Image (cartoon, rainbow, N blue to C red; front, side):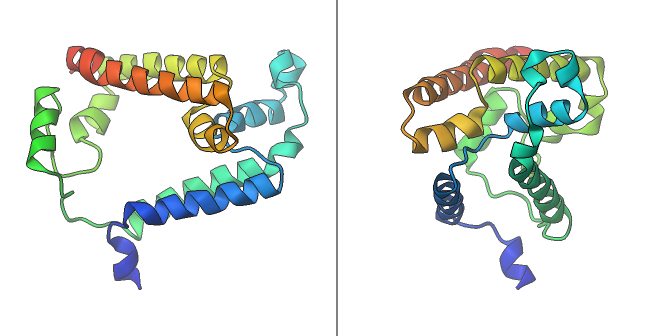
Length: 185
């Protein structure tokens, strides 16, 4: 069984799992989004006393906090127990595209010269993480949610603002990939 779990799964397995979760959330009248967990954690810590945005009953978000905890535990299990040390199978054209963007493919899912400890602790890495964190935080607050909330939950509820947000996410991702990433690396 462990060997089956360590293999890459087809895309449709995760698609079916996401669809199942969304049906459950719709049935129970909930909406999915990870950025709301930060608001709940800040509210738990007492930030609602100083900032009105955090002044709400965080207990209504217990289910979402459990989902976050499950994602952290699942990610830990996947990266340790279910780890597959074989190099990632990536097409030659994708490796060439990454090379043209200045990203060296080292066989891992996350290239070490972008996601490695050496880069993260360098001045450039700290600057990229700080600016990236600020932009993601501002963007998710300005858009009224994060990519998972809008793209999964909002679109499944046929919300036009979520469609606009998702289009903006894609445009931003393309701009980052083709214009900003080559300048950084």
